[in-house]
Each structure stands twice: as C-alpha cells, then as structure tokens.
Figure 1: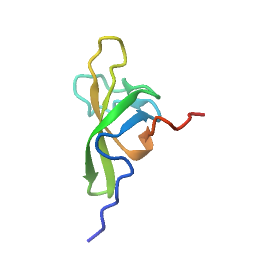
Figure 2 (figure 1 turned 135 degrees about the vertical axis):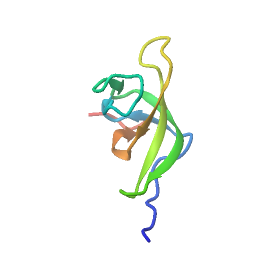
Figure 3 (figure 1 turned 90 degrees about the horizontal axis):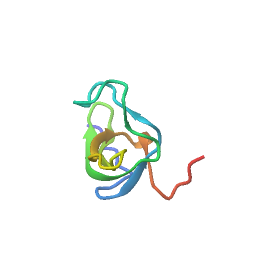
Length: 90
C-alpha cells in the first residue's frame, strides 16, 4: 500500500490561479477550451481530495467571478495550478 501524499494547501486557505485554468471538457456548462479562471484569479480551497492512481492531492477551489456580477466557479485543481496570494508572480 502506498502512503498518501500530504497536500500543501489546506481547506479554507486563500489561493490564486498560477496559470490560466482551461476547461478540458470535464467542466459542465462551459465550452471546451474556455478559460475557467485566469492567471491571478483569487479563490479559496473548499475541499481537499486525493487522486488515487497518481497519489496526488486534488483541490476544489471556489474562484471569484471573473466578471462583475459573475457567479463564483468551483474548479478541481492540482498543486501546480495554484499558488499562495503572497507569492510574487514573475
């Protein structure tokens, strides 16, 4: 049995998208290839799960609406797609 890899982000933690998050076709109601959250969009971890086959944490992140009045989106993300807000972007 493989040890579960510990997540680096926790439930309730503020994060932002480290890159443009593009719909790979698995997000319902949004066209494939559409940007779900642009790089820098702020969000909050609302759940932390685990992808058993790859032994990596998967985060459900509620991102702020991209446009004024837009509803927040909850998107499944991997660690490389997220960063802490205090980290400076290049």
